[in-house]
Amino acid sequence: MINILIAGYHGFGNCGDEATLQAMTVNIRDMADDVKITALSYKPELTKIEYNIESVQRFNVMQVFNVIRRSDIILSGGGTLLQDGTSTRSLLYYLSIIKVAKILRKRVMLYANGIGPVNGRFNRRLIKYVVNKVDFITLRENMSAADLKAIGVKKPEIHITADPAFTLKSVSADRVSDIFLKEGIPLDRDIIGVSVRSWNGFNGEDFIDKIAAVCDRFVREGKTVLLIPMQFPKDVAISKKLMNSMSEKSFILKNEYTPSEILGIIGKVHVMLSMRLHTLIFAGVKRVPMAGIIYDPKVEYYLDVLGMPAGGDIRTALIDEKELYKCLSCIFDNYDDYVLRLDKKVEILEKKARENDIFLEGQLEIIRRKRKHKF
Image (cartoon, rainbow, N blue to C red; front, side):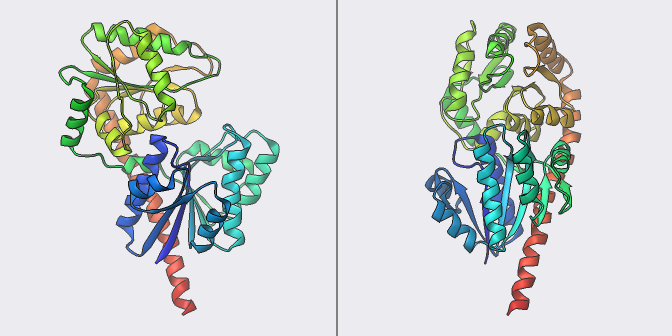
């Protein structure tokens, strides 16, 4: 058996990161039957049950060291792991795993990573030093490749793929119907899905009141507004704040769901308005037209790649209520055109996402050949 270790941001209740792990494990198993998968996780017991894989506590140093020692290849990803926007500590954590793996002479693949922001000069030097020694790199965005090259990573060759979540499969239609019934969400009107997160930048949380006012207008026009938290419990509070800011009735998912369930739920939505990257990706997978609220370059990038509009950019300006309403109205008025455009774009991204596993298969074959020569 080939032992694969997945080192990402897992077990924290972030649906986007869990979606990448679910897609990775399913795709790897479909590709190879001689593999054993282990993932680092904040909640290893939950990860074991959810994905039927092995898992160890990501903050237990000895457990992490031992699982690296027993592994044949370490997959760093997916997601934006190499960045210091969250903290330098987070960056050092993932670089340390790569460094230890290379000291132990293990193969390392950056798997569908996003890169940046990396602002610290010392942090950039560390990335250059460590990442230049990995065996294979796939990145989910062109801008991440530009960032990595600017940092000074020259080897190995960088391959641009797409986020693994583009290959995710949803639960059955019956399961989705059961969720809507359990949550008490009506299906007799067009649904606008809304996914927000906290933001402490230029705009503070002024954008919540603006989005709430726009949602009120659509409810009065006969639409249903469904708030979809993507990270529990972090997104719940801000979603409830939006709900309480509305004067009209709206709905919120009260329970936490798996990525495949959230994907199925979004498939019932008619238009998606989101700050969260993976809500937009899920909408794309289900061919649901969308508008994004940009707070991060990765959201801007994928809106551009998908050919979908932005309803505002809270990094630099306040949300314009009239423009946001106009943006969403335009999607409803030209619905079929948006769906057709999305279908063409996502078909390409789904193929690009599967390249991650084609490249991984090449790494697994190298491991198999070395074992044959050894014996």
